[in-house]
Image 1: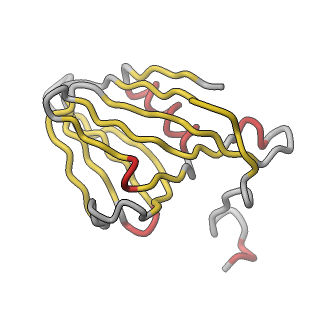
Image 2: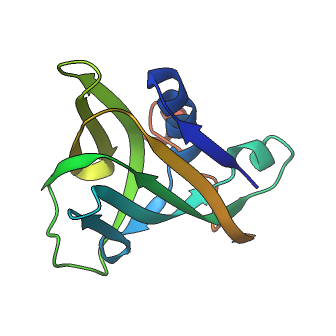
Length: 145
């Protein structure tokens, strides 16, 4: 079970790597403007377990603090049952320490969080369950084309 804290771009890169190919329902994302928090619940593919031959997912929570604004592209926020697949999480610096956290999903969907600074936490929240398959990408296997 992982618990990671993000305070800089290196920390965010570690979280991004661990959340690559996580799935999230649109209805499991929320921006709380009064508290400046954006939170989401994901089904994280356990890449460390995959190195041991396992093929599992875990419920994982991720929240960002000091969020000023949230914007989406490529998906309807009202379509709560829509499932997105997370490709990466990056940071675009602004007037230091502020900037934008960008969550990029497959199919051209994205979420942009304008933040005062990088401050986030990722926590595994429960048991794992068998994944239907190990996530793959066309670049990983030329025969998938």
